[in-house]
Image 1 (spheres, rainbow over the protein chains, first blue to last red):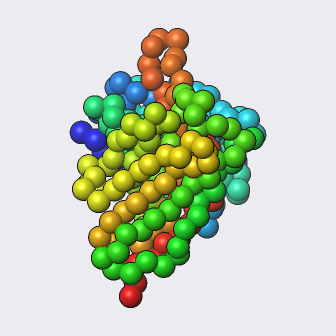
Image 2 (cartoon, helix red, strand yellow):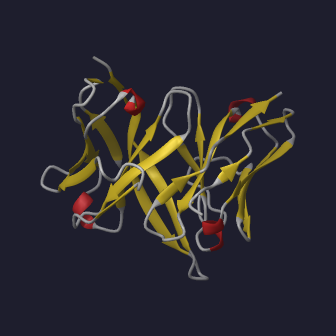
Image 3 (cartoon, each protein chain N blue to C red):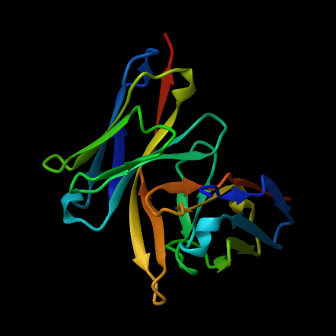
Length: 108
Length: 127
């Protein structure tokens, strides 16, 4: 399958922890990367590889992977973390790129 | 610091060809090691990968768009371009260019990621 499936929406209380998942067969062969997108802005890379954060991304963002599922965890969610989050990886052929369906995170 | 900037018409008529260019600064496309992609986002929808080009000119396209897409590179100008033919209103979207980097983990697993993005440009298809 070339699809990456995410839950459409999740909510989290301020300061609490939220996990966003991304499922797809290709994740057994490739790591996912994760992107945060706020309204009217370009996506921003927040996690790549096993659990790597680009410079400037807070350490409350972390990633993990098991089998066909990749996860993004926000530990101690802040109001500014409210955004859409997308996972991305290759398809099973390795030639094409595919984005997850996206998860809208609401911080209560 | 690598920067990408999309440019091109914001309005295209139905059945015509959408043409966009991405200008890369702060790094050279011809240095290799990266894949240069076009990605789009329909209004209120998710991200859709359109295709990529390597500095050598090799390309791969989203199978759903393959018959209408051409991505080319001009290393002398440090630019890569997108052409999408026979557009309809369904091609109205924000179009992003992005650089894909790749990490090979200690265990040999490939970890691709888009580390730099353009700001995006809205292209509207309308008569």
